[in-house]
Length: 314
Length: 314
Ligand SMILES: [Ca+2]
Ligand SMILES: [Ca+2]
Image 1 (cartoon, rainbow over the protein chains, first blue to last red):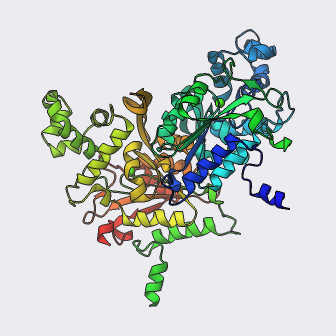
Image 2: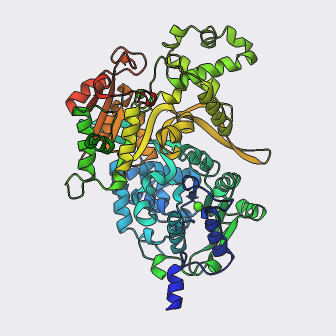
Image 3: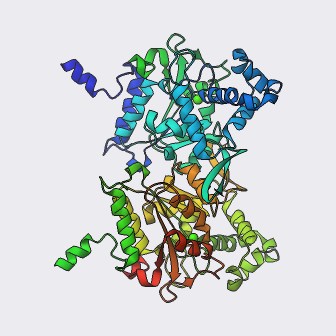
């Protein structure tokens, strides 16, 4: 009975006992204990999370890129020219290896082709349908089941302690918003991401917002603090990422006054998930890992620190 | 005693009894009564407010423009070239009449000159200092006292009923955020406005966000629903404005499914505030006023509907 009581009181049951779990709990206790000189008032308790590789997996390819690839295949019959045009030719010929090393430019072409030209309402519907039917090639489960159980617990733990949790992702803002509320408990107004431009217009007497083939903002690297400043207007006191794309967000967050917390998820578990860092094409973690040591950011060793990876393994 | 109990229970004491007050209270009751088919769940209770002319006055010139003018005067000693250059010459010669009819382009030059080139931190400090010392020419009070008491009550009433209140203003997002929390109870992350581009950089080992001389987004007219979609990601169920700049926000808001509410503040009180609509250079209300009739939006007749205008008149 005592054990089960202790377990019931553990806000982070999927985190193994050790320095990482201790650092998280200490931070929250120090920031929320009244009378403690490090106490932070609730409106200032802002925590920002990267998504790909931090809240869910990002291998073998970014899940949103897989969505774009599946859209290309679905739309191919209407576009015979894609049989000879790159990057469409590669996609349609299913050269899986080529997919994992698409250039940033090719990725952008795929995203623009498949993400623009519809109204926001139609786009949401398409994403929702894909999330229901698509299956991850390794785990044969919906992509939204490939979220990290320890991070779900951390989000809930922070919110229970008065934190407002945000996503600040290089992924598409409107893609993320389709599932962030159900899967992470994060409402659309707390999801920040990359965006394409949109346009308001009246169609058949009804107002719509149309998605245009033009980049609005890339929410990555130095773009992350810029977006945080624009959308939130306050500096977070805690930031969570997994790659060099999160370096500036962690710099910006932890350089503020008072108590601060920076954390990087290091993918070290080749058996249960994937192991990668400096050499990886997707989710490269190099400069930020070095800086973590200098600045005292917490680094999650996924293999050591996480009791379970996905909710279905609990 | 009965009267005072009734008054204490009145959530909108500065609103005179009549159709406008009734429409507001009926909307909130219908949207929040469980079991009512029009019931709206709390996360969907989003209400957006224009600022200039809706939450505070905007005469004789937009208050933010007055801030820019005062900055030009403060910086003039360092810019002898302004004595002959327009629009600076006009500003420095205090041609008050010319100020009320500055072109959009001249306003933009003034805003860019005075709002860019500093870090976000320095800019906030400058705005805060100005708000403390500047006085409105007619009322000889700080500009933040020129907010509308009935609208403060409405904001509080909506929040007490589970609404999330947002500002969606053509004014500068970082200007508004300096006072919105104290004055309106609206935190920075619920303030949306026009913006200039910013850049993240490391200065002397410390990360800063620098304000650039380049427009990022104009949050006016068709830009308002675009910004609402980007920042909030949900369609509001209620929107409040005062000019043609709010037309598209009201169209977008009220075209959604279920119960909706659109409201325009009509400035009809030349004695206590100002009276203007179709002919006004600032805050023109023409097309939206016509459309209000067709679409059943509520129109506040300031003179008739408001018992007090400003908090200091209570
Ligand atoms: Ca990532
Ligand atoms: Ca206005």
